[in-house]
Length: 288
Image (cartoon, one colour):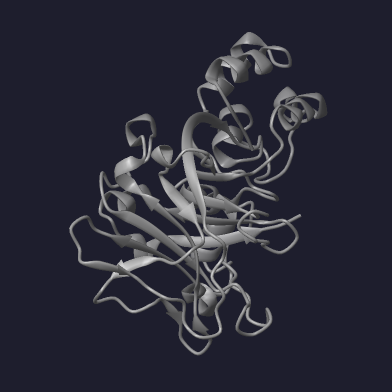
């Protein structure tokens, strides 16, 4: 929801919350890696768009029955300041993100977390250091996005008051995903957070900047097949099992528009991240 320095975010909280509540809230902040267009080639940690560098033995990712996925972004893990994060990124190699963006069918097929048949429409590939790789041209029918080199900086990130972790800290009996009677849900505090930083942006790790309800709840609903209500504690528990791997915002320079200026999100369980099981990452997207 918001990113900045720990000191700035704690100071903001103290203007709206009691010292005890402000300290509790600050303790829920998580470090993330914010990505932005790089002005200096020496600072590049990844890129949006362009053509992917894939293992020579790997096929271009496809959604069976629909066609190849578009290449969205890549991250050079060796250049990421991963020691400053609280997610276990690989120390080397590259992460590549692909998404079926509608170029081939004019948007008829949509990738949705709640639709298991569409899960193959988004993919994360991990290319290990030392693999033989080559730049791959885009399959017929796909126009690559313009390449935008990315630089990184670490920042503390905050999430919505109705995120399960925050709700548990301040109102564990409140309905999941809704406001509750606590100053942390007050409109002045929410407005202050939005005014401090209202943009989603591109990010690795940290709290996701959800455009709508927390994306962790969307993923939890999907993996539980939509069979539990929001009042069921299993949904909150499952939502807590997922962390943000990456989010990629709509970006004019890269000619990327996800719905109505939306955001693409990939989440993963920490144990799968530690074991490099990126095929188990889950995808969702949101727009205004």
